[in-house]
Image (cartoon, rainbow, N blue to C red):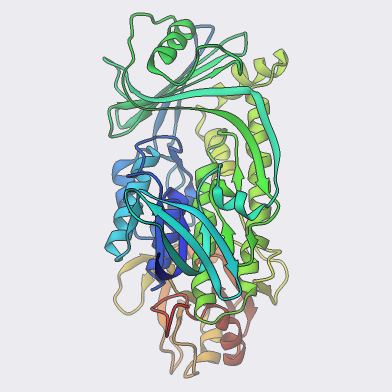
Length: 544
């Protein structure tokens, strides 16, 4: 049996596994990414990218491709018992200085995966398709995993860490034996498919078209346009014991005829068919030894709120820099911090998506009336729509209670553990207009200083080479300051952060504030920045 070595072995090339592979590749980590399928499945499943996920994709270098193919404006027509109930326009929020991507971007999951896969190839990585995990053992010196490729002999990979991104039926999770507590709603079964609808266009005036048919008996059928494909995702609930209603084009056609009354329309060219039963579950541990879980392998969600895929992508983004730093010699507490930070997030997301499902699918007639006749029509009001997007955008997710953050100050708008907001700035050296996210972009941590007082204390100091520094000031640059200096355009940075003069914030590689202080000393900066050493660049010595 052939044996190979790797820093990290990733199981599953969905959006979660691909995000982790891209993040590790840009940090010089040798990761092996395997996928049992022969190619990226052409399925729409997770089709909405939330604002925070868009910021992640910006940092990973793929946001232009995403925005070029996706659409954020949507127009949805709702029917109740085949009578039009409302016609809603959404996705009209304007970018803000602190939130550059305020709307959900719609595109099929396979396209998101394809964009990430291309980015991985650009970074020198690859996906080993047609290769499945058959088992693994975790030892003191690493994980030994056995892989089986199509028409090839089994091989063994010896990796420092193994990450299971292999979905809700995860073999990695089952092999670990971690708990996966929660609820399966047997009464909530859905059929899904990617189809064409001859004569119907999934895009209209640069907006994605969607339709939803609700009925007094509680049944539902939805049709969501898939931009740039000419296809639609169709989904319908069915009784759990419905005989003959398995994923097929005839079954979807039957449900279409019954629920829309449009028997003149024939569905066609199904490229993907599936079904699912609503599950709300999460693991009791994200990690056992050198084996970790991310995405649906760790938590599965109801589809309401569009949270599942986004939470998985952000799991991977949280984990990537921690693995890189640990492999370079950082402490084991970095890996422990992954579970400490992401488990509360998954729990909160599960509660939120379940609450939305309970309201939308409530059998209570009074609740149904309020949702269909009051709440849904209100979504066409821009202010209401913006407020709703804000609730599911995931930009409010933070890690204030994390053992990996420290705050020397009290109060304030942006604290240690919070997402670091964007802002409009000007490069003092070149006069070029920039965004603060341009400074943060890339695999390194950034020391962000407000006012020349903070910079003066660090001018000429021996600061870590792996740390970027940025001074925000409208005054003179202190003598000896060698970092980047930017001007605050329209005071947007000060409005976003509301810092006291002399405040310093250490921005982690994943865009969260890791440390906040006032009047920083070189020794304190070196001490806090040591946590991020090795998050970029190739590892020194053997991977094992």
